[in-house]
Length: 184
Image 1 (cartoon, rainbow, N blue to C red):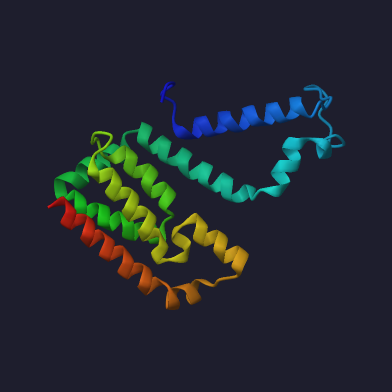
Image 2 (cartoon, rainbow, N blue to C red):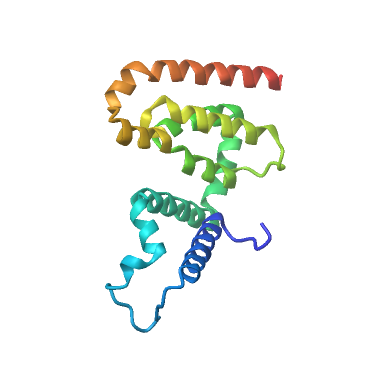
């Protein structure tokens, strides 16, 4: 917030600082002019990168960069203005939650942050957080945790669809109802 840079720039800066700090603390001799593969196996940065799921991180980085690019062109704000002119914001947020079951909830929330110009503690932000977070659980592919669970626990999409989706949808719409009643 101090630098007014997009969030993905902060993430990349933090990762760079951690990599530099890890290299310094490991007291490894390295040269910027002589980069060879023989020394890369001793690097703490490269060792850490082998233990994380890099495709998922790059996926989220790419999505956040895409949304930041669309936001800088004014596309997301323009879409938000059109939505507010054509339908009730609460209905749109409810639809955002349903969309987050299909599209991951991280880009949904990132995009919605650029769509609306409400004050910081406005109830719409709480509503968006609830709708995207809970709505993403209606399908296993709607959240990063669900995708990880698919891989780790070998849960199939159709098993989740048959056994969990209806329960998650009931919980989602019950929560939406309670939230809308509280607004009245």
